[in-house]
Image (cartoon, rainbow, N blue to C red):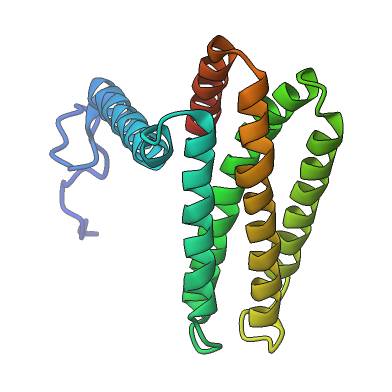
Length: 201
C-alpha cells in the first residue's frame, strides 16, 4: 500500500526548524528579560509622570493641595457626563479611585502621624474618619450602574464631601501643623510624602 505522506518526517529531531516560534532557550530568556526591563521602565516612567505634578509643587502641603485640585477636576469631568457615557464614567471612576488611594496613603502614613506627634490627635482622627467616608462613596459608586438615576447625585455629594475635607486641610490643619513643627521636620514630611506618593503612583 502506498504511503500518502511520502517520506516527510512529522518531527524535527535535528532542531533545525525555521519556525518563528523556535527561539531557543537563550532567545526566550533574552526576550523575557527585555520584556521585563521594558515593563519596569514603563512603570517607572508612569510613576514619575504621576508623582511629578505633586512633587513639583514644593512642600508637602502644597503638594497635597495640588492633588486635591486634580481630584476635584476629575469630579467635574464625571459631573459633565450623562447616562449614555457608561464607559467614560467607569474610566473616570477608576482614575478617581486611584488618585484618592494614592493621596490617602500619603496622608494616613505620613501627615496624620505627624499631627498626632504634634498633639493634634482629634484632627487626625476626624480626617481619618472622613477618609473612611470617601471609601464608602467609592464602594457605593463601584456597585452602582453608571446609568442609574442616582449616579450623578451620588457623585455630586461625594465631590462636596471631598471638597470640604480638602478646604479644612488646606485652610486650617496643614498651616497650623506647619507652624508648630521645625523646618527640618517640615522637609522630612515633604520627602516622606513624595516617597509615599511615588510608591502608590
